[in-house]
Image 1 (cartoon, rainbow, N blue to C red):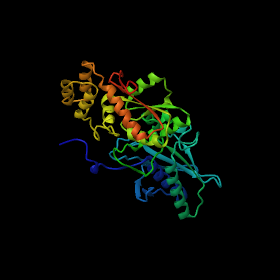
Image 2: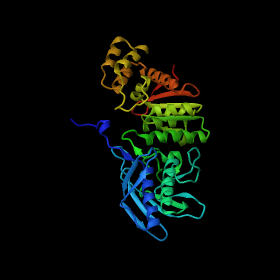
Image 3: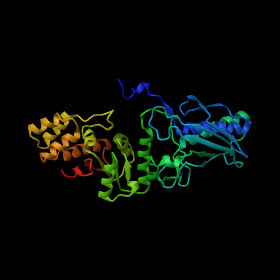
Image 4: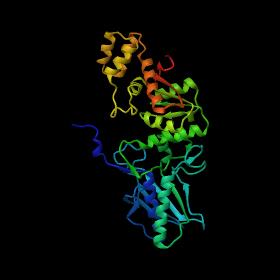
Length: 363
């Protein structure tokens, strides 16, 4: 029997921040000793010790350079296989550890992120990991910690086009991320991180209305409907729970949730993770919802035995019965309960062609 591996058999990987820290540690050790180790060990934020093999090394005029190829394990990470390269050189006296963005590492251009505008997109936890590694090595060899670090990810600018960095105002490449150093397969923590940062950017821009969509079709439709700026759009994907939990603590005045009928049907049934492997659309519940919206027994029974949400939607369309409006209303109720007030919510359901089929405002 084939299929996705069970979660306990999935191989974990290492964050970009962990790989960058290993590259920095190897390069700095070589800067002080003149020799690169074949393997470098670092301490991860929760205390684990992890060894990394060097993929490349170089000594130049006043600097050393080391590279680590990122292994994201079995996670579908866009940076899997990318080489994270650190150039290390002595900094000016009293400067401490400083960071620069090299090729393929982005620069922050909008407020709202945990970094100042103009800073390289190297997040606080990876910065602290690298600073700790530098400090430990400097102490071992009796040196100060005035060190300049330049991180590069060859091809990173192209890879960043597959991420939400552009929308977050991170230009020119990827972000160096990671809070634990470990990538848990299919946790999609980087996606949820991007959702949170997208909300932060929208709030910093004083936007009063944001729209979170499950996919590109619904996002394009809701953008046209409200003429929203790019920073108001949140690529939520399946992670409506990650969105709502963060908005509960960091509210905005107005939220529109836009998505396909089946995805929003799951939300209407109380699911906050809409991925097909972690929740399913209950057709029996959907048939009862249709009954509440006025469906007769024949239509209700047909919906209960339908194979997909799309088929149920087509049955209702043929019967001129607005099931999608009922789904949008129920989905709004679930979202409002998760938010616990403070935000005005509207839910819009779209079909696969981007046509509006359900609107919670039509109650």
